Amino acid sequence: DVKVTQSSRYLVKRTGEKVFLECVQDMDHENMFWYRQDPGLGLRLIYFSYDVKMKEKGDIPEGYSVSREKKERFSLILESASTNQTSMYLCASSFSRTYNSPLHFGNGTRLTVT
Amino acid sequence: DQQVKQNSPSLSVQEGRISILNCDYTNSMFDYFLWYKKYPAEGPTFLISISSIKDKNEDGRFTVFLNKSAKHLSLHIVPSQPGDSAVYFCAASGAYNQGGKLIFGQGTELSVKP
Image (cartoon, rainbow over all chains, first blue to last red; front, side, top):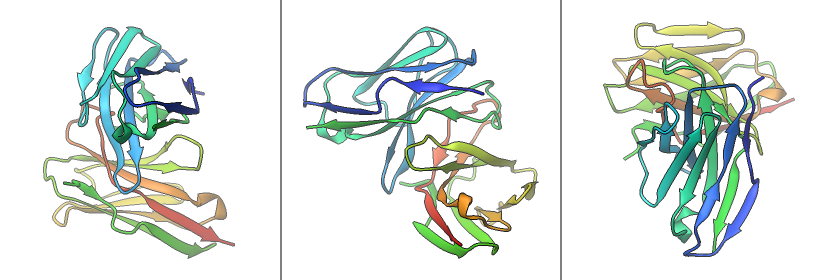
């Protein structure tokens, strides 16, 4: 069974801090994604990666960056955390690029920025 | 602007009855649609998908219907079971080979009462 592990379940950070959210998958998937989930907005794509060292912007990349140095690990970086980045962050991976290759999500990191 | 809309935030159904979850979209370039289910404190899990060349796809108790002219899709669960109580997200994609790049709706919370 695919496992996507996010390093923290809950995180509280101060405004202006640099924040790292880590995600590891154990199924040798090529593709990895970062989404955030907010009430009334559903899930929105921040960044994704179809290969190691590769990254592409999603729909809401402002204020974020990512790193993918190894196939199994995809990190989301908040360069200078702001209160509007308080959210649930969900990492996902998938086997192939076809539309029906399901996303396998981690359990999420609830980030609060004060 | 929300390109994928789930206008019902919640739905309550008796066990054994049919649950119908609805989703509307505005972008005619969307060709692929998926449903995900999310339990509290867990990441979403893939449920079922459909491409625009079909108008129906079935998997056990779950059937997705697509009406392209109306830009509307629905998920039917028959019969509903208490374990189906969860938040359901519909999602859309515009390209066959850009799996994972999804536009999600806001979610509908389904409650199935025994």
